[in-house]
Image (tube, one colour):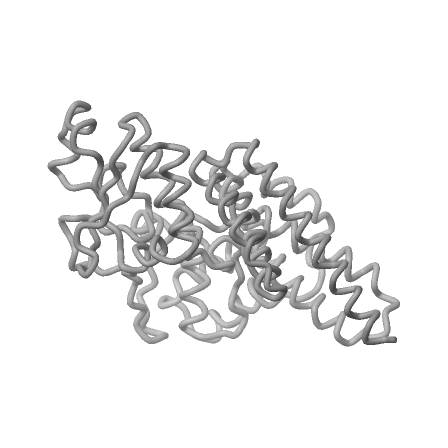
Length: 342
């Protein structure tokens, strides 16, 4: 998991990215090699070996220990982290303690209701992951400038376990519809530029994930970059990542095909990212308007979503409160605008 390190290999560091040698001598790994490297760890791989062998009785008496990176540890110390820890204690009866806060790997002790310890562990890790999650982690965006680093990043992105390809493609297609409807607008140059950028991203997703027609050949060239002349790789790069006009006769059919290849986990990740976006938007609204009480309230509601495993009941409460914030913010913004006019 993000933020956790195997106890037996603390020397690995937090981000073991592959070292791409300069093109054209770069030895790009194959898809199978990369996907194996980036595959999920075994469930107990990040736990201390002694804990993995303990029985249920020991769990009840001693609590549960996990090891957090400094980045994750800091997520639990700020104001939102304090709110989360309070909700964890209230809803699950589990408290969080830190044994060695100055160490590189912070020992985190979860103690309390034995039957909720593993649920609390999941909640802690999810909270920290979502706090550090960036839009590009879930909503993929390809680099379009040809170069060694751009190609390497794009190929790694293709095998991201978090990226939600179908949802991203659906967003892009919806944006194309909106831009087409605005064709009579005054700033046509700006619209055309955005339309080109949207098509680049949408076409790239379809080519990379479905590999229909010539897509397979061009993807093979990109993945075997060191075995081809640089100009050949550039042409394939532009075909895949720089096609800025409609390429396919039926995008709906292709998106349906893409949808069939999406796992339930990817769909769930995207839904959770949407909730995280609402939380960040709510925090921004409250900060701009000086609404301290409101941000505390919605932060607590968001924490309850995570603690209770993203259940529909708490998601509904959170969304309702968020909509109230948006409505209140819009009314205030409109009122201020009218005052300036008069």
